[in-house]
Structures are given as C-alpha cells and as structure tokens.
Length: 142
Image 1: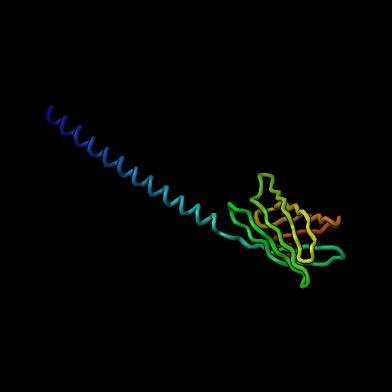
Image 2: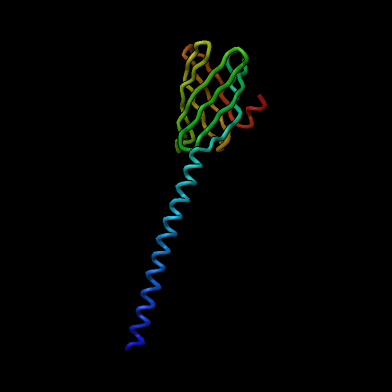
C-alpha cells in the first residue's frame, strides 16, 4: 500500500511539472507568435507601378503594401505626381482607392491582384478619362 501511495505521489508530482512546463511553453509560443505577427504587420513590400494616362502618358513609381494596413502608391511622369492609399485587399482580390494628382486631377482606382505581387486595373478620373494601372513585374515593361 505504501509503495502504491509513493508511486501515486511521484506520478502526480511529475504531472504537475508537465502541466507547468506546458503552460510555460504555451505562453512562450504565444509571445513568439504575437511578435511574429507584429513583425509581419510592420513589414512593407514594395512593387513597381506604371500608370498610363491620356495620350499614352506614362507615370512610373512604386506601390508599398503592409500586411494588415493596406498600402499606398505614387507615380510620376516627371511633371505630375499621382498618389493613392488603399486598404488591405478583400477576399475577391480587388481594392478600390482614391487617387489625387499634383495637377488637381482626382479619381477612383480599382485594381485586382492576379498574384500576391502583381495585377492591374483602371483609374477613372473625375474629368472622365480612364487610366490604366499596372503593378508588379509587368509595370517594368511599360
């Protein structure tokens, strides 16, 4: 009987140590995951952008995306600068964003991700003009 009681106490003691260790490991895992997500959320990814306006005027620049916050783009043709901010992409892979240019033009852009790093769409300016918007490697060829 004493032998069984001693064995039970030993097993119980080991189990308490295991559950403490599992709790510690779980907290450590949670902290590491939170830090990883924080770093991922702060991580910017940059892509080339090309915008083709009226008369085939080409604007070149970059789009910067942040995992949880969306991103922004800027492009210039040397005389005029245009920019816009967008929220993270929806499950459909399409984002809509306001666009403003240094010459006073404003509009609304719509872009669809073909891959996580590339896609394109259109910007419709308030004057009725339609501009082509390309981001990713294809923008380098414009």
